[in-house]
Length: 432
Image (cartoon, rainbow, N blue to C red; front, side, top):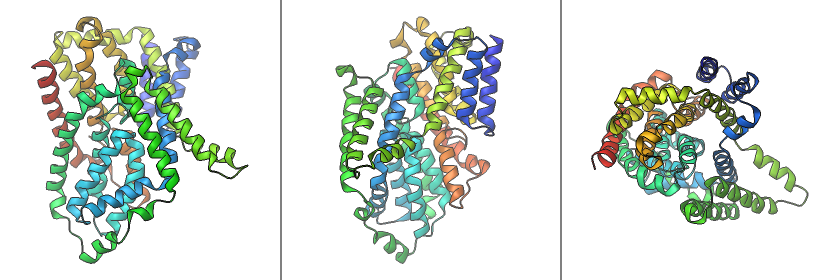
């Protein structure tokens, strides 16, 4: 067990150091598992969750095509109009928009679309960018926690545990709404109540019309239609016997076909290449390598030992294990990226199924893991991929966040969300 553990630690260390691209680190870790004979090539291929890969790729393709229409910029401008560009209300409204979009798309994509527009609005209203950047990071992770497709950890959990889109809606959306409401109250108390903007600056923002942001109306309606059908397939997946990955990849392929058919003859191939190039291949290969690393660890038997340690530490108590998983995953997700953490935890939780009466008995543990990982990622600037994406955008725009500056305000708010989640999980699943 020692050698695969060393490979896992080295892979994590490389990812955390940020000196090596995380995709390279994960692929090197996976290659080390195979070359060292800890898992053969067939085992490595079987260890990859192809449903997760298809879901990620399909949704990335849909978003890459949809954002060219200007849809998301129009949504942000419409949000500013809805609150008459009042700074405090705008801070709250942009959080709501970010959370909603993050629930339907992945949170990294959401912040890449919403943050640039938000920075333009804060500049026009002469408002500090920091409160908006922190609030949007946290809103994206809260919204992402609500659905199967909102956050990569949920995609991993849903695929490996066989949990459906509807189950995530029923079990996680209620607490996500509560946490989001608490988040809006906290950000208003901390920043919103003191934000002001001159009447002429508000008038300037209100002069911009959402419709002007739309650059391709045909592309917009095609994207909305395809996305609607894909989400409907997610909802009906169990009845139709369709995996989410198949629905997303089919939707991405159809939208790519419709989009390419509108291109001039002879340029369709170049257009398809350009759209496929906009997929986040770094994340795709990061997942591929990570799956192989975790498969090697799982085959070594180490995860079974960890599972028994968890059972012994909690005395086999379901509520004890649930609270340890929720709080522990929140703490660790604040320190390391929540994606590799969850990928490692999933087979550990699966090892516990016999002690909890099978897959159904494990469900509360899965919800605890999802909430801890998604919400705990808000705690520091390196806790989730969305945080790092916003940090990069902010630095490019001349508004560096700073690790400690972010953590000083984000960590206490994250703690509130974790406490609310612990109350929810214990009350709904263990004391009901």
